[in-house]
Length: 458
Image 1 (spheres, rainbow, N blue to C red):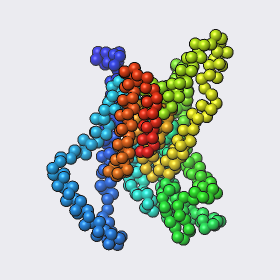
Image 2: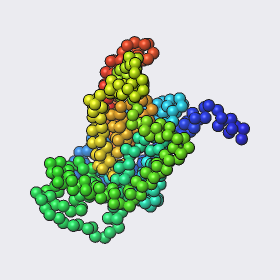
Image 3: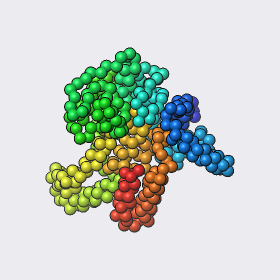
Image 4: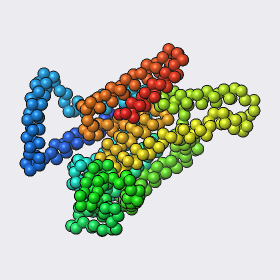
């Protein structure tokens, strides 16, 4: 009891709590990766002899030669075990270790989205390629609607702790909606096909639309019978029809509606409790602060220099002004921010909305972790404020979708090299500015632009 009381009263209690949360997060990531390996090994099937026999014979001869070379290399170089690789992704990663030990609460914030991913991974027991026409079977240990309720509560807590998980809402709703509809379709013996008016070779029936939804809106599906060649980019009416179908899926499926209601209700309830106990400050610092935050220190974003100049103009205006009260504040607002700057500041929202919509409706129903990673990565890259702890938001999701990334391809190797060079350039420029006191503001801004290009390229 004395040890617990001393631990709770110490000023390092927060660091201990964040380190424990960081360890739990790493354990969950390692556990999920083990389950992914187990499911992938159990789902591997021997290829049939009727599918492309000539090509497979040629591939087998090449694979045998490659396997011989790899075996010789593996004999010379010891490969790390799978458990060690799982631990290296997060537990031994120096960035999360530095973030949690310095007293930042990002480990707790990251833990909530990871727990949501745990609830969602149970839905996907069988992985099927995007080009496949098969429908995945969802076999979870809990009913879909019960999982939707639990995930909604966790998601509401995550949004209350940090606002950024709100970008996952549509993705999770789409995943639950697709799951429930797939469950309904598989239980029915006969598929409902309602034929509608055919317009320009387009056959409006349920099976075609489901095939489009399941293949991420972008795969080159071809149907000679119906004349389909993929997503109808050049036909606005068909796009509106698909949008109407997704609205019906999201807001008229019970599991997705339950998730949305519980997540919003949990967030509203916790926000109400915070305002009740701590007053208006809790609302301003916990929610409204994120919409107006401008921070030019330790900021990797390309907008930090604009924020720095705006703050300089604000301080200069305060020194020159002789008026007081409302007149001074109005003059300060006019000299600090202009409508043109405000408009330019909202331009980065356009690619964020496009990426968010595509990943939410095109990738999330198929692969939840990959969609969440892409959304978080794009959100951090295009954000006005990007600090080091923001990187942990998507680093916790990267190990869960690492097997879907072609790490050994030339493009990936070049992109990662470009990213590391941009990070080193930014750190060197920031060191000369903050540690050596050089006037290298423009060099830091150019390094931020280079870092932004590297992220977009990746």
